[in-house]
Length: 256
Image 1 (cartoon, rainbow, N blue to C red):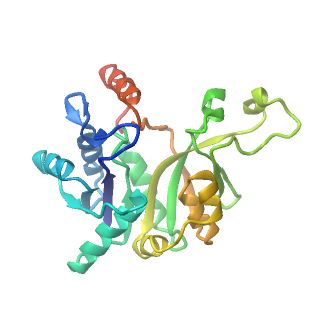
Image 2: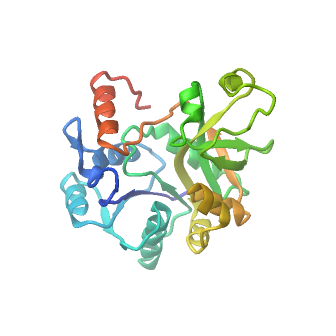
């Protein structure tokens, strides 16, 4: 199985402009992501997909591969789709494409391996990860996307609100009566499926929740879920970067 990992890295973040180049432990955030994805033995190629020459030069400086992509893309998924299409135009074929965001410096290689393993089943077209929610703060925060699954292991819905809703219980006690899961936003696609979802227009659900995976569900695609013990630490703000520095300095985050 040929696996392509694409790391979308956009410069113009509203809350943290230039964050892929912000230094974490003396290295750009995007370099941490690249190193961890390169540690996966089953990956054939890793490409940083960017829209800014500064990021491209930084990636090339640390020995990575970068590709300049359109500034018009609505999401990292669209950026992944462009990279795949351009590589296919060069005669390079891949079975699976994994989307690892460029602001996830603590992504574990084992997470990527878990997703790639899903595609040993012919009926899997999209796969992603979830992890258990342990605190009320996590459950109630709209920044943590929650997910519920069916008996077949596929996602039923993603929401910024706590789901499922426990109608007859105090919300403060919900964690005592049900299991809740947070979505970990690493995606893997069969190549043909990635090209298909990149052609979809945003649906009603996505416009409500601002979650692109709802576009795929609304269009009828099954999204397979796998469990991970790693919650990951994404960097969206300068405060997140300070937290990441503390984690790195304390060696508090496992890299397996």
